[in-house]
Image (cartoon, rainbow, N blue to C red; front, side, top):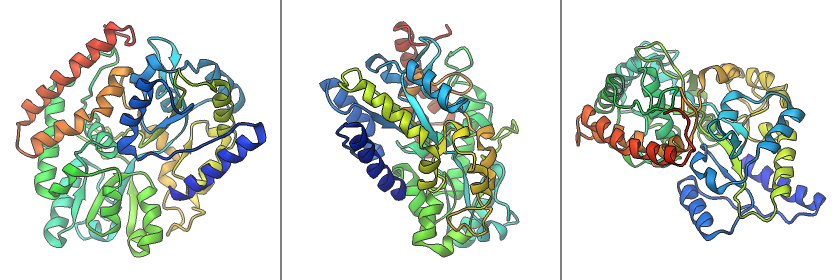
Length: 402
């Protein structure tokens, strides 16, 4: 959100001026964030504070434990959203490897005028409806469904949402790998049908902006995305924006419809930092200004500490940024009830973090959708990739369970 970035840059520098700290802000493209961070850690020097848009759990051995910061934040700001807490906490080590200050729900964004023509004016509510309606829209208008299957955030979140709706997951509550199941195979099979009937090949090479751009350009009938795509459309394509409406995450055969946060904003402090205490004070001040930050993000950033933005429900029910109708965002008021951390039903442990940043799940979906493997073969390969990751982190004492 450009408005938030402009506000944040000025805010961070002003905070530094007031407390006597020289603050420099560097913006890094999401696709480069992981590799850039790993390079800094290997070099043993760099930024005192780094923010990821997914849990950086696999970096825990190289990060400052922020448990004292977390305790102070809860004392000052009240109870934290559980999904935000889980994004920065390892129950096996009882350490906070990061500090979550905000998150964004991932709802469905659909073109009402197109879906009304196929008898779904309120948008699809299930993955099966997405396939059926998306197929009809593509045949009639040449407008595709946009669910990514590439190495980027949206694709990772969508793959998990689809799996969860079928009763599948990477791990169980005991942090055991359970991905190779009939439920996962069924979820991948569902994605194959959706791709072949309602999508286009561009989804295999998308970056984090591609689905936004496709929706705004009128090429997509449905995407899974936070409000950023809609906000951009309000400025660049007002006619499209007025036609974009939102749905909760799609349900599968289990009747469950949940999604991961997209993104979850987690700051962390590398062990090489020379300004650890200043970094902690900055994060406390950032949360103290949650109301301003939420507003400046145009309601993209939802607060990790809800009590700090008591006006949020009012803003979502009557959008201060010109939504038409003004209550278009009201379904986000209960978004925490249909959002899970990426490790669901277990924690966001280091193994889950590595599986996420390596995009193993969207690659699993892509291999089957492209016909390079059967769904069963692709799931088996994903399991073969994931099991050594879990074994590695368990041997280092950073995973619970057995």
